[in-house]
Amino acid sequence: MAEIRLENIHKTFGKTVATRDVSLTIHDREFMVLLGPSGCGKTTLLRGIAGLEQIDAGRIFIGGQDVTDLPPRQRRIAMVFQSYAVFPHLTVYENIAFGLRMQRLPDAEVKERAQSAAELLQIAELFQRYPAQLSGGQRQRVAVARAIAVQAEVLLMDEPLSNLDALLRLEMRAELKRLLKEVKSTVVYVTHDQVEALSLGDRIAVMKEGAILQCHTPLKVYDFPASDFVGGFIGNPPMNFLAGQVSADGDGLTVTAGGARFHPPAAVQALLRAKPGARVQLGIRAENIEASASRLEGALSGAVLVVEPLGSHNLLTVQVGDERVKVNTHADAAFQPGQPIWLKLAADKIRWMDRESGLAIE
Amino acid sequence: MKPSAATLRVLGRALTYALAVLVALWVLVPIYLIGVAAFSPQLAVYQYPRPFFPAPFSTETMLFFLKSAGVAASVRSSIVVALITLALSTLIGAPAGYAVARFIFPGRDSFRLLVVSTRAFPIVILSIPLAVTFIRWDMYDSVYSLALMHTALALPFTILITSSVFASVPRDLEEAAMTLGCNPIQAFLRVALPLALPGLAAATLFTFVLSWNEVFAAVILTVRNRTLPALVLTVLDVSPLPYRFAGGFFMLAPSLIFMLFIRRYLFTLWGRVTK
Image (cartoon, rainbow over all chains, first blue to last red; front, side, top):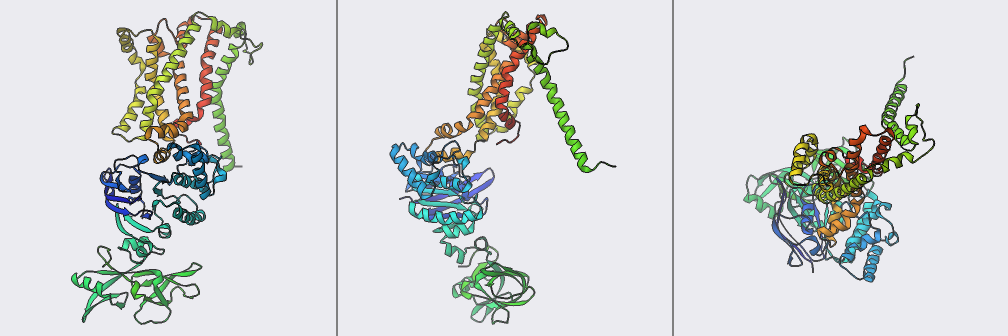
């Protein structure tokens, strides 16, 4: 059992706050991704869990044990570094066996476990090589094998794929996913790449300026972002945001945005009524907008600005009033720049947000 | 016809190379001539024009020098002083270098500056108080006291070189070792030290050469237990020409050989990035 519990982790570097009272529970054998732009504190949090960074305040529990004041070697963790940190003076075999030797395991067991870790990563034939003789991708595999070989209960990964080229990254991503299902460790994975986060994580914790904005499953974070920052950071293209005007309409409320009228769901209506004068914005993803060359009932009208064919689909940039909206259309749809266009938003996919705070209304 | 830009560029480069060759010759030719004189028979030194090759090759001059009064003893003193200096300055300087390279502590930058500024203090000014103090403390005229002085002189360099050596070992590697079960000392011994070893060896060699060549402190602080440079300097104007050439060569040789070995690390020290 290795549940990780972070309680009010606070860390500052000089005057910069790296993490601001962060609390988070990562379940046993869960794959948790810490996602955020650079400088959001995700790496600091990870290094805090590893024990490589002393935190200023808060407590860290691993498997129920308070490890806040323990050095890294007593925390039952293994870590993969962004730079790989493969020891240049040791062979691939000695690198992978390093952690096992530190545990003073008998030679036979060291050999067996190094072998099986290397086989998982398909680098057993490189055992006698030195890191300088390896490619970046191979070094990466050595770093992962070295971390896996110790069979730690917690596996920490700090942007492990960011130094690989695009193709290799794609391949390694799938392989990591397969691999980490097998090793049965609790994984904390830091990345700034939202695609990596969506594809790998059981849950994603989105961070900004030292705080966790939202922590949920990839689909939840994608479909129901807690704020406009999350919606804009996750997904490609980012979520569209349209300013809306709230007006009373008989019993209910109506929101006008981009020249079209929308009726928020009952729950949102109730919240809006409790806060009169609140300004709202509608968040909507590019794939949840239906584009039409002819007038549609209840649709926004605009003009096509840019057409970007992406193979599987076309990405349109549409000018609606003084806002720009990204829309996915079928690859066969023949839209031309300058052409008038009508956009119908899928009503159940609209995310209602407060325009001042950026937070979702829920 | 006006010279084209390409010709000018070639001309410019040729000039640069010519200057470089000139500077190199300025340094190398005297060294070479000293070598030639040191391995020629004693009388060849007085020949004119100077032979450009030792003909006939002879160790007579060198042997004459080495057998002269006091030389053997002073070579021994020099080696003892250099070895003690090497050991002391490595023991003190390497940890300091590691600290400067790895840890951010209050006053780190001032410490760095302080280390360098000790060399800005001319030893000439220090010489009288130093000699007086050494006499008072009954440390005068001893190779061990001289080694202490040399350690003080060498430490800034040792600290600077070792800190640049340790800074070139990525911190990640030690951290990785710590996540894999090492305590900080084990991480240092198993990862940082092996990787820094060639650079540290260079630093110690540099210290050795520094002490081997140092003459001023040696002249001031010793009378009977002279190191080689101190001895040669004090007898220079009363010794025959072959003695001077042989002595010069004998003092030059170790420095030249060491410099050749540690060249790479000196470049790093001077800020050139080498692979």
